[in-house]
Length: 444
Image (cartoon, rainbow, N blue to C red; front, side):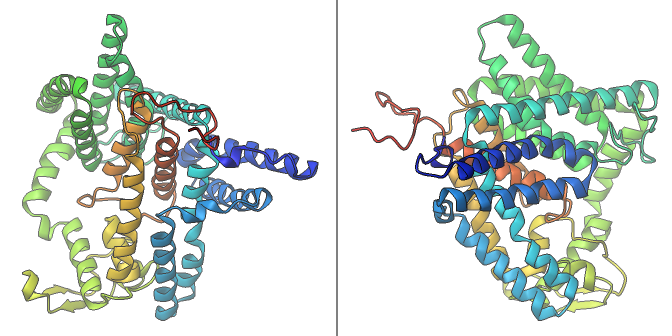
């Protein structure tokens, strides 16, 4: 609990009622946000924006702006300022308009950290929402795999991917977002249990989840899931042998894909290995080349918000940087184009240049550093899995969706606030320390 939960007795009654109403509404929006990100970009964006606006009003009512002193606020504000300067410099109205709206994402993180999820009951409730949504997604994937269609009658995607409860192939990334905050705390709790039935149930849930991701057939989601599980094994000693056993099961599932799911094998194994062997000439390689040229040609300010989409149709050349071993790069007009460069950090660099990239990386480092406070996977598995989730989703070597568009933005900035809320309200690990229920009550 933080001081935001402590109502000042001197406040007028109308302010107290309004503050409680804002908290109730903000909490409801937060609990609904994962479901909204399932099916509606617009509604999820509106809900996230409302949470931020309500938080500003609440801060004014409580006359408490201490959250502005959090270490990550300064680099985040600097990043938003650089995005605005770059967008104004480019001179495109759409660019600087989006730059003006960018702070709402960081405001969502601040609201989640300091207000909505300051109480453990709310954090556990949100974890329950993630768990139920993960079960729903898995059930729809298996229904589609076994019957050919999901509950809405949608078949597999054309390349063989399972779409789960969606019409388009979004199940892999969405399941990754749900897995570590929703499934893994339950699994870790079961593995720490002395009850053999609970332990076996946790192992079955883990195996079932991993096999679901394999059958979904989306490459980067599978890679990041295994990477996150590897990090979990490093953090949790009791998870290491189950992780080794899981790797063996996943390897067996991949080996059997030509029989049980030929389309998944063609995409997940054959196409993936071919892309890695010829990455430079693949679609993703061309995107990364075009983005790299943009950054090398506009290193300080970038090209503003949506700069990659606005300028990717142009033919570009860069002399490279011989000191860093970067050769000259060429990209003819019309090649390497998409609405974003499919990497968070390349997107940030093309938006606000290397200065903006440095500010964004500093913000991420502050998030992760704050998330390690009182980190104890045994005592607080949710916090540990949120740390793994944030580390995994913000890993720089990955192909990603657009960072500042929903639903991706909703997941990333929600996780950052959730992780820091869990960390700053976690009990210290030191022995013989009494932790009061109210952290603002000082003890000798």
